[in-house]
Length: 356
Image (cartoon, rainbow, N blue to C red; front, side, top):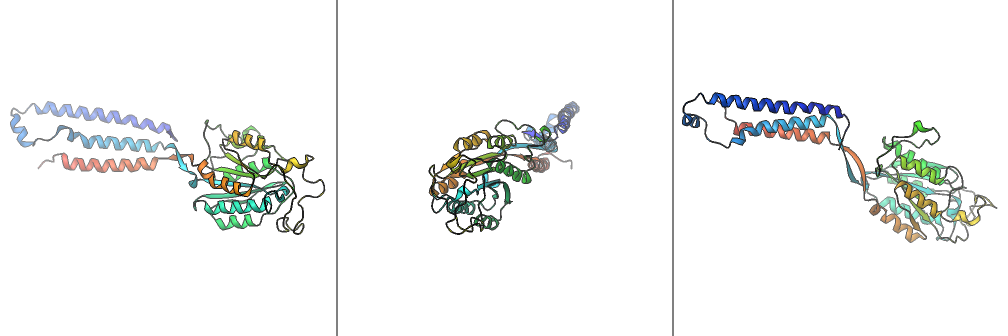
């Protein structure tokens, strides 16, 4: 447990003072009691009852004041909450290699179907954001519970040239920073002043990133460097490497090409978008993606076909069942104090004799 205003806890020092005053008053009453010569007369005037009961009202009052003192310091605890109470960012690769037909009818169509099913099966209260990346990365849909907005964006995906995995990671961090003030934006170019305070070891933001790609980074910041930035913000990344290691032809529809060609057109022209690496840029960079997962505290998954991708996405919530979140408990302590005061009044009315 931690406290937002720890100095307020000094107010609790009044409790032992009150206890000392109470004990002193009890001793004074005992001294006065010896003035009576007839013990039988005292017992007749004060019917027998359990001695401890007369102390209960004061004990409850003392406990209530203690609870109020703790509440004033704004305590917070670290607790596990279901992933459905958090948010996740889907970062989807829409580079030209997603037109490869090693996954029928092509990688992009299979990914669209799997992601649609994933979005529709999530808890209605889960916020989901969509980041798309090819030659650059962009937040296509900010985290939202509006499933229709997400599905419209997924259905209208178009491919582009290049693959910027590192930039997609940073955009995902920025999308999380917009909804969680405890996560600083990426801003890797602004120097040490822009870096957040170091997070405790094993401490993570409740939001996660699911990154689906079928290739390797071709431009921009390297994924490993972007992963370090995400890790410093406590953002976990769960990469999914999609596609086989033997891509064949690349065919996308006119809609998937953004009107650049008709059915059966290739996303690549002669020698474009491959970065001089040939077919290697049509195969998921498993080593790099595993490093991203390891650095950020996530987990890497491989999906060589549409069925496996469906399975990975369906099982993902089981791999991220809970998230750690700091929750302030001041309200609960105030409620406890109120309950103790009511109990104290009840005890005083029931067990404390009143003069007649």
